Image 1 (cartoon, one colour):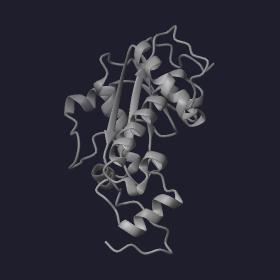
Image 2 (cartoon, rainbow, N blue to C red):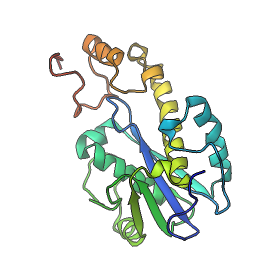
Image 3 (cartoon, helix red, strand yellow):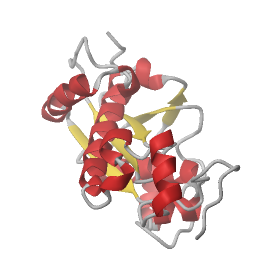
Image 4 (cartoon, rainbow, N blue to C red):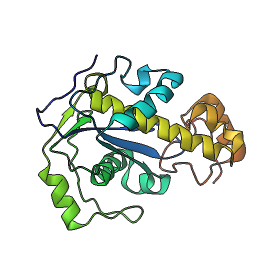
Length: 219
């Protein structure tokens, strides 16, 4: 089983994202505070779990968590502030949504969660000065492969992945030719062939290379 806690604080939140490498759809972030006695032998990095297991874990996490939050950041915001900053901003938004202010934040990856906090943006949520100061006041630690080491980060990765998959299934109904129900917006051969044939949609990230360099796309 993964470790329960990094900092020793009771209200430690784990946070992670899903969909960073996709060509279409949002990047989705989640933050989760788990109770100190929480345990689950199956919970792990969402990428190492089957869809069936993730779907079983989702209601367990939601039921047992002290609190949790999920946020979608959509392509217009990703294109404006770049995908890495959008991923971090999504985590910030989740932390602010939590019913309990965390005493400590652990985040998957190697980038400090407060890097470029308060970046100016036209789309999406605008952080107030009070919100920025609150986020800055919470100690944090980035942990490489944290989603396969700590339960709360793994829980956040599962919620981010399952909520994003549900969203992609919904928008698949609007544009079924891209088969987002299957590829979830990732750069599969099938997805790129559909982009070449039908062009991009409002859900595509125009700052991304939608097609390989050897192919052209008339915009």
